[in-house]
Length: 238
Image (cartoon, rainbow, N blue to C red; front, side, top):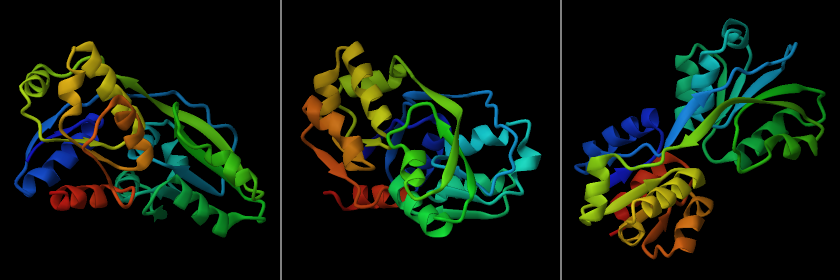
């Protein structure tokens, strides 16, 4: 299949490699640009650290207090985030192979009613309020914005031409924001009708929603919100 990956560049490159290994032709259009934020962490210490994306881990890896942080346990969403944490020097990493709700359940089971302090490294735009959910179980969470994701206003020229020519069979969407950016970029290029025509492979129902609202009909949702399940979906969708 001729596939388009829209996630930020570092993750898009890794996903493209996996897809090419399965014989797909892959183009990349990173429609979000990740920018680190100079975060003030406070005094500490913390009983554990929490991240919900590999983007957070990469931003934490550049923080001037990294040497202090790597000795704390880190809880992540997904294998990619966990791998990124270990690569950054974190030695005690636990992961929930699902979504933020799965991670919240893991943290609740481990820390509820134990008077623990967690430091949550988050993106500027979030679809779930992890801290509020955990507070209901007596878990204190300090949320620190460590990065922001900025929309990219245009498709790369080769991708724009491929969309216009109907040469994309499927588009992978890993977040609601990338799906929204895909749609707004297509509108800006006067290509919305063409952009809606391919199959759209989405990490979750929430990711799929703006595409369906825009009129996409060939939408496929991963049975589990992780990359492995999404890639398996592509192999079984036809």
